Length: 564
View 1 (cartoon, rainbow, N blue to C red):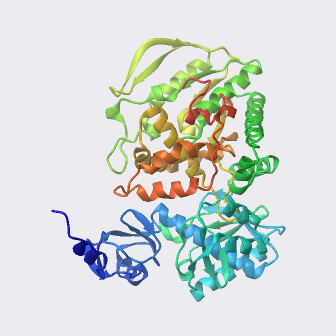
View 2 (view 1 turned 45 degrees about the vertical axis):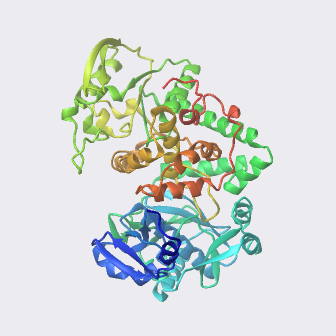
């Protein structure tokens, strides 16, 4: 029976809502319009880390938001990735305000991630230990005073004029392309700024951080998710840092440092030149790595990197460069050296851990490497993934003494993989999409976001997976990377940044329709919504014919000249 109009109106006018708190399965009936700040402290006891936000019906909300409908509620703390993102973003606002108070003539710029923190600079000013000490003291003073952080809404023109008066033209350009006419800014002690994503409601929450001098600036360290009572450990990471700095110089060559710059190029029809120069820089870097390998005297090339970093296309392009230098490289696949399924290690949840280095037959692999490098013939195995066993098909391989051997796989940088081979015979390459583009001076683009969007597009196009399925798998993918890849990245002899400054404007046209299909009944809805908001900053690049057929990007959108 259809409800009467009176019943519908009465329901709309009800003054209370019912929410179920997942922390203790409590069902609460509260007044409609109550803020989560009025109730969250009651549930802090169920968390080992500070609560910074809330998930209501699978949507992330700030604690200052009001409860307007029935639903399921779970509070977010610093042991969750979403909680760390919110905390880190809030720390940047705290840092911005402290910097404006101490160094009013200089401008804060957040460049890139570095270990457990973000590398930052105040433009035009080198940060020494004394300046960093004063900056940290000012931030801690704001924490002790526990000021409220408010969200205010303005029309886009007012917000743009505010940032123009501060000479923050990156935000002016960013807002120029925003579709919405209203803009939400955060306010702390009379200072306003724009952030992509939520932040905390009070400065008193932000007492766990540290600042460490690095190059001309410093690294701001956020809490360690494994122990949120202390900041993450600081590590210099010179190889990774040098790659980021190199790609920032590339950004200057391309004339693109942020999303506003690339959007302006799109509307001025300068995309083709941007694509050609970005791809030329990639080719130049691959050629440099090939030359470095030839000078090393090594025989074995080991290529490693996280998911969706473009390792396969890089390996094929590197092979072409080596052939252009008179070499004839041979590649073998680590995928054929898995142990039989029943011998595969299990993770902490009891599932097969195919990412573990012990999921590989290390003894057989090392025996084969030694024979190949000694000029002997081997029979290559073939792994039958359906049966979960190695099979022998009679495929034979022998290489000449001047032939490089290329191995691509996530464990390439780990010495344990090739423990029988002397280090001087190995040339290790780390490949990752280390995004050099920022949304604006304070809002960086996470390298992880670029990779998840790449993977989502590829999974849909070539593997038949939905965006929901990719998002569900991503947690385990990231866990494997943190355990088996990132700890070894500084072992590399060379690093290749596979990020392309224009790629997100291309990936947008593929990813958007996939993400829209994730509905609010799924826990992954909040992440799909976040990524949709993220790619909405970009104007689309639709001229796909301008993308070279050997581009890294073709590995994900299709049309590559290489076979995978």
